[in-house]
Length: 373
Image 1 (cartoon, one colour):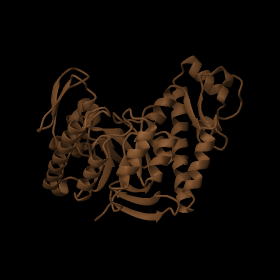
Image 2 (cartoon, rainbow, N blue to C red; image 1 turned 90 degrees about the horizontal axis):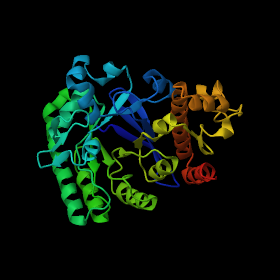
Image 3 (cartoon, one colour; image 1 turned 30 degrees about the vertical axis):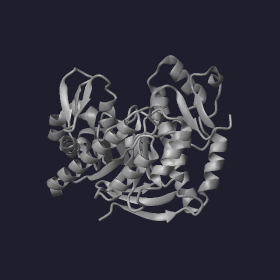
């Protein structure tokens, strides 16, 4: 049975509403997932993440595999109990992190051999082993191991990487099926093909025919221009079946999110919201403000009028400015709560616009205000 049901199609674009049914509850889409790479969303308690309204967050197989390690996670029965997170959990296979270890990894048919960035120890990720690892983590959505490529490679190398991704995907699916009822999570495939239209089309067609629960679009937001991102996003998304949830990995700015939703994307994640918060960058409807700037020193107003987060309802811009200038940890903590509240509200507004068949207008007006400066 499909985990995804489309509930409404916007009449002005490909944007759509849907419902994901997962092991720890139902998720309304489009949805933004906060990133909790190592089993924690940085700077905020999981209970506060849930109180904002999030019911799906992301963890990373590579980092969790290395630390705390599978023995620890197994002893707790998985990451949910270990980290006191009661919502849904999606885990990246770790492929992107492994392939970022330039000089420390080797790609072969069997899998990818790599050295830990922590202690230099040697490890092997295979399509089967990352499924086993995500099974131990207790992922509600698990991702297959894929071959990530930079935007500068030639067509032959891009095809080789795509075809290896396809072979790994089949192995991952076969292994998941062998685990049968023991594997409680849902499994997503990942479309690759670099920045070549024919390869993207071929990869999308391959995954459309596979028995995956959802389909992700990989290999975007890896250094390409915004024009290239928009083109290859639209090209790839239009070739993925409507019957399954679509997920674009690693995007988190309002313009990229709005572009993705317009093309029928249901899910996305990014570290941007929390990373910027830790450095004093706070999202508002009028753009990003930098709390370290002296302009806020005497500002008694909130970060964002109408925002329900404690940074806005309890404190002033001047106080947050002081916290960042003084190096107090409360500053990044409040900023993190604010930014995650901003994106949760942003997605609610997106879903409301789709429900009213006015997404194209909403996107144009939102971007006009956010990037007005």
